[in-house]
Length: 297
Image (tube, rainbow, N blue to C red):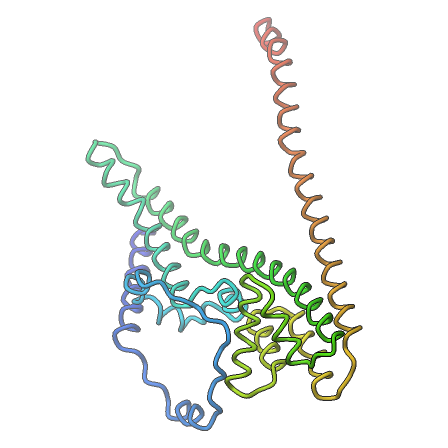
């Protein structure tokens, strides 16, 4: 009974995804009017690339997963940090889930050719577990990469603040200091900052507004705070050199704290193998005595 219910639910979900892809729902008139009256969306600064093979194989599942509210606001920011497209991410989740669901049945078919069998219940349970793992694994991978890239961005941002502070101390203006500091650095973080400043020139907006937008897109609060401080210098004429130096020092202190916590965590992880080795050594010593006692009973 349970396999039939699971197969029926899977078939229904597959048919629903196919219908969603083949016959997309028509939006209501009120939604269309709201889109016409609303302001045009702001062009994002960060660019995300979609893999062609994932789009071609998994695009059937993308509309249905989007209607479920995936991937979410937080995960979209993580995808922008890693430079991965939303459609690629959703398609990879669907393909990995389907592969995990089908893999035990393929193994079951190969074993059947040799006269062996795992049983329908085992194949069904293994397929569901592998499908769940395949569906969740891309999210975990993106979150881990985004956390690492955000840390690297904050490291680069502290150097960028020092360069801006030095350029301002040399008598340059705010926009010139930002451009010169961004042109000196190298790496993904400085590339994104240069793209934001270039977007400000093309759209004829202030650079601190594009930096604030970049901070919101990447979910990096330090960049948004930097844009707020620079906007005071650009609009109110405030002297922000001391503020930028303090922010750079705070970022470096945060880096040192993170490095110390990582080192402490690595030290604690190193204690586990030593403990297991010690327990194994105790078992090796106690084994003859235990066997002698058991044989004497």
